[in-house]
Image 1 (tube, helix red, strand yellow):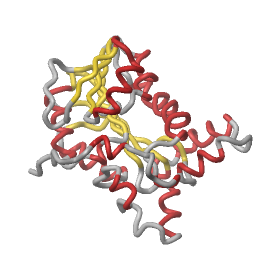
Image 2 (cartoon, rainbow, N blue to C red; image 1 turned 180 degrees about the vertical axis):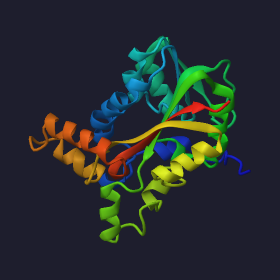
Image 3 (cartoon, one colour; image 1 turned 60 degrees about the vertical axis):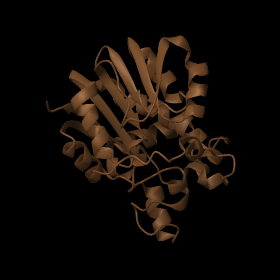
Amino acid sequence: MAQQDNRRDYNAEMADSHLPENSRYSYGFDYDVMHPYMVRSFEPFFRKGSLLELGCAKGDLTRRLRPHFDDVTCVEAADDALAVARERLGADVTLVPGLFEDVQLPRRYDNIVMTHVLEHLDDPVRVLRRVNEEWLAPGGRFFLACPNANAPSRQIAVKMGLISHNSAVTPAEAEHGHRCTYALDTLERDATAAGLRVVHRSGIFFKALANFQWDRLLKTDIISPAYLDGCYALGQQYPDLCSTIYLVCESSR
């Protein structure tokens, strides 16, 4: 079994300041468009009770999730991001520094969320197995979301010669710590290998443009809220053509 590379600099992997517009880690599209639609997609499957968020970064998604749960715990490996999250979220969210491979948590949780994190892990099945065997409460739900290898924006990039194939890890993605790029079949493969039972699979937001292109458009009046809702609705019809794919899982224990 592969071991976590403790020489990784998680703060550097999240940094954007030295990168060109089309190679950043974070975009307004992620926060202003995708995060609300993620919560909308997950909400019908939420269990009442507690939440564990694996990889909260600076707490942007956490702030949208927090109103839905009695208590919230977050685990994050990047010290710089965790400091920002602590300032944003305050004392009513428990923040735990550490690696998923090593961290010891004192309880099980009714809901566990991991969004755009699994593709960064050196041994994703090992971490998913911990979710299944150690952290997910009986009857709890695990929400696992990743960028989609088959998103039209990536397929267009292949046709343009910018990347070699849909699931390629680009140099910019590698600099941000990506180890792989998932499609629905490979995401479900790893979840199943960890002993999780998939109860729902879908996608979030039909997406034919790159994130930096979306950021430019969102500053204009070209994109309306109705158009965004249309892309979200179309994504549910064609999950394999979405920006993000996700699974809702339960423990097979």
